[in-house]
Amino acid sequence: MKRRSLLTFVLTLLAPVFCGLVLAQNEPATVQLDPGKEVLGSVKVTVYQGTNGDPAAAGPRGKEVSAETAQRLSREQKLKFAKYVELAKDNRALYRSYDNWSQPFEPSDEIMLRFEAQSTLHDGTMRLDLELWLSRKKILKTDAALTHGKPLLVLGPEWKGGRLILEVELSPEKNGKP
Image (tube, rainbow, N blue to C red; front, top):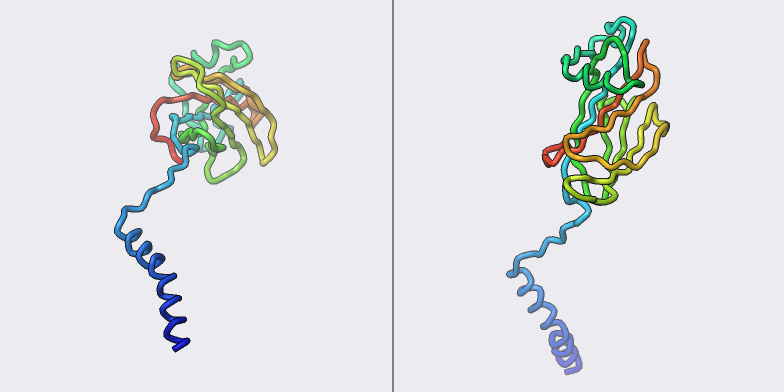
């Protein structure tokens, strides 16, 4: 008799739990979305080499830039060189709350750019935290206000007989690589 009353008591306690499980299986699952993974746009990074010497020293990766790009780069006094060569491009998604990394020379980590959204100002202008890394060492850290269509030009270190120039541009398109 004691066994039967004990079994009845346990079933009485567990019945609501089993009923709850059955009901929960029939309801659609709710997905918790991470607001930090919202894509705000993309960041395009282009690496150029400016040189007064032979542009062939950049190797087979180097492509000649258009006259328009060369003119745009040479407008800035510190970026004036006789020849410009495009070395690499990368387009990465810009997440709301996460570090974003661009590796233009993928899979090499010789040159990497870390960027993180800080705030949205106005008219497509966004404040970003930017870091330039060379050979796994941070060489530049800055906050920059980038506007769609107005790239930030960064004069990099000497490289193969010239200087590296990084162009960082904010794009409203949300099609960058994760």
